Each structure stands twice: as C-alpha cells, then as structure tokens.
Length: 419
Image (cartoon, rainbow, N blue to C red; front, top):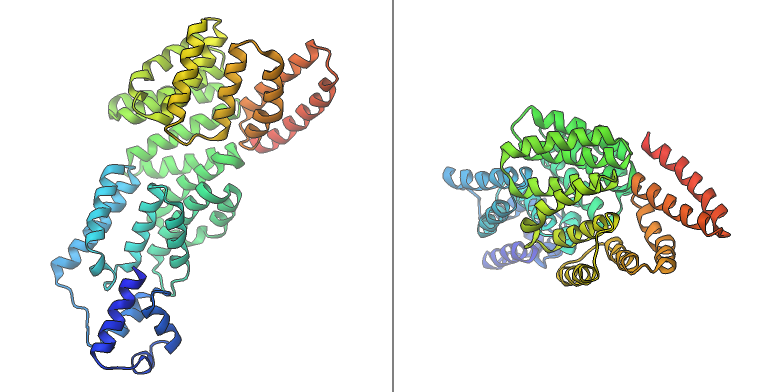
C-alpha cells in the first residue's frame, strides 16, 4: 500500500513536471516527500490530500461512493464485534477491492484499522505488527479511530507479546476509549487478565463488559463474557459460582442456536466437572461433543486428552483404548499448533496409562508443573502439587519437605492473585 500511494504521488508529480521542492513546499520536508514516494512513509490524510491537490488531483467522491466506503467499514466492525468470522473476512475482501479509493479518502485510517483487525483475526503476526507500527506513527487520528487502535493494540500485545505489557498499556490508555467502545474495552481487558495475570480482575472487567453489552444487542459477546467468567470462577476454586455460570450459559445457548459456542461451552463444562471429580458426568458431556469436534483438529486434540484422563480416573481404560487414544491424539496434533502444555500433558497420559509411575511424576514435577504455574490456574496447580506431595510422602522421599515448602509459598502467592 505504501508503494502504491508513493507511486501515485511520484507519477502525478512527474506528469505535472514539478520538482520535489515545488510539491513539498509548505506541506512537508523534501526528504519526507522523497520517503513517501519510495514507499517508506505513509502520509496522514491531511498531508496526502494537500499533496494531491497541489498536483491538481482534487479528491471529490460522489455521495454514493462515500456511502459505499462507510457502509463496508460499518459492516466489517459489526461482524468483528459479533465474532462472525466468515462474514468479516468476506467484507474485508470487498474493502480490499476499494483500496485505491480508501487511500485517497477521509477513511484511510479506518481502513488501516480494519486491516489490522483482519490480520489479528487471521493470526498474521508480522503483518499485524507492521500495521501497528504504521498506525502508531500517524500524525493525525480521530478520537474514535484512536479508541479502536488502543483496543486492537491491547489484543495484539495479549496474543503475541506479554499479558502484563498488555495490561499496563490498557491501564495507561483507558482515557482514550470513547463511550461506544467501553464494552469492548472491558471485554479485552477481561481477556488480558484471564490469560496470565489475575482471574479475579478478569471477573471484574468481564462483569462490566457483560453489563455494558447487555444494554445493546450483542448477545455473542455476552455469551463469551459469561464463558470467561465461568472459567475464572473455576480457576479460583469457586465451584458453585462456576457451575451456576455454566448452567446459565447452556440455557442461553439452547435458545441462541449457535452450534460452535454451544459445544465449546459443553466442553468447558466437562472440564469443570472433571476438575470437580465428577468423572461420570464429565465423560457424558465430552461424548456429546465428540461428533461436532471431529472436523476441528485443535478442539479434537483437547477433547481426546480430556476423555483420556476421565477414563483413567474411572479405571475404565483397556490396552486397545490406550493405543487408540495415543494414535488419535498424535494424528490430530500433527494438523494443528498446540501449546506445549498439551503435548506434555499427552506424554503424562501415556505414562499414566502404562503405569510408568516414576517417569510420570518426574515429568509432572520438572516440566508440566512449571508450564501451568505460568498460567495462574489455581485449581490445576493445586491439584498437581497435592498429587506430587502424596506420591513423595508415600515413598518417604527426601523431596517431600522441599516440595511442601514450595506448595505453601505457591498457595500464598495464588491467594494474592485470587483477591
């Protein structure tokens, strides 16, 4: 895009037989114009308009063309806020066809922000980072555009950089959020705190987001807020509150008729039941998700692991089933990028299935426990510590006392995170 704009300026300057000095005087420096023409810099809308007007290329769109550009932007953000991925993608493809109009219109910044949102959705890390840099260095941005930019940058930092940096950025830029974006801001903030920092703060912000979305019609975001709240109640060990949220969620989704959200919520509810040691109920819930997740590799991997562990707890796992679980997981995992935690977890399941006690507890302590401690998942951390302590105590192992001290330290730090 930079080169496209630069070529427009350069082509029309040469056509008008003007020097860079003649075109730049009173608008920008000669070196700045040179970098615009080479595609190094992207001019802001005011500078671009002044340069084009000096070259006799006054921008004057017809009213219906203006309306088309604005409608595409409005449609894109509607689909974005409702997590309508396919519609969002197709709308942006239509916007790309209008790129030559966007870059010489008053909607350039909004087009760039939509492009950033699309790259984040497509998980194109490098393109998203490049767009962030461009937008960060624009000289002029409206309050509405700046508000959108802050929210998108929060999302980028949370996904690709560091949750703590994302939280710091959110806290220091809250005053830039316009009233129409408050609900989305609280929602993104809730996601940031949910990832690695504080489940309790996530609950506060998700509750604010839920109440704000409830004043409108964004039922999709309301459902997601409830889902994140249920997960964080569970992480904090507040099981009654978590189950209450899950039951309410499933009731809402039975009316909403969104199959993807319904089965994701069922899966999360199954994880909740498994953590609550209600294994029979958990397995039935997982079974109800099996067919739907069969075409979704990442979901299928996680479902296989959950069903595997549940069957182990039920002491209902035959040798052929162990081979089947192992084969199914490896087949699904090869088709998607799973977090290292889940790959290690699969290794734990194999060792446990084969009753290789010594290697199971070694891997649990040296690898898996370290990975989950980074996530502040209170229930899972506590569960694994107690599992290790029980093992070392029964073996009268010298590691028992050292691990007990670490467990109490972890309990204290988790208590601080919880409240």
